[in-house]
Image (cartoon, rainbow, N blue to C red):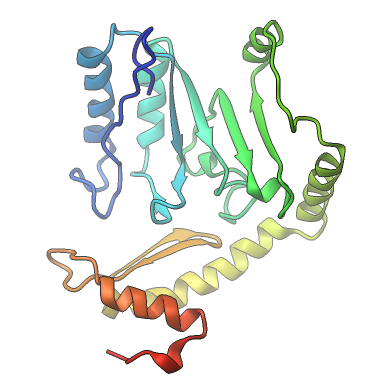
Length: 233
């Protein structure tokens, strides 16, 4: 979160319901954001950016209601709210086309990539007319911007998502898969996510939540088809 004219970036506490210090309570995490603004900045910020469902961070859904509280805090401090939808967009959550819908918020800027091109190198930014107008007054340069082949591919991806009802497919298959995974949760601890954006976390014991690194590494290799060369714990 940019803090002042020097362009400082502040990292706030991860609102992880499973491992976060405040559990599923969003108020503690939101207070941390407010504290960063009050004591680490001039009181004004440029913006706040986050995934609405963490991808590489472990398919973690943020504490319920977190973004509603934080977006209000950030906007009162003069900042814009940016949602990173590189991994949780285009219906993969099943319940919503965009991941931020799970938090009931509307961001000022949305960044997207990957799924929009289905393998083609393509990214996009969507924002409000007011913000776009400001950017239109600036000189911008991008070597690969406006690629007509990738743009055509992106249009086709959007058509297929709608016509083949991919979001509905993610909801149906994801619900089935999540149900089966939760049967395993009794032995393997934490299962989370929605649609086809799901995560499973293996731990050595449920109280301390120590990562089961060895078993996870073995599982990765088994899923890659290399199980013949690995011992089974």
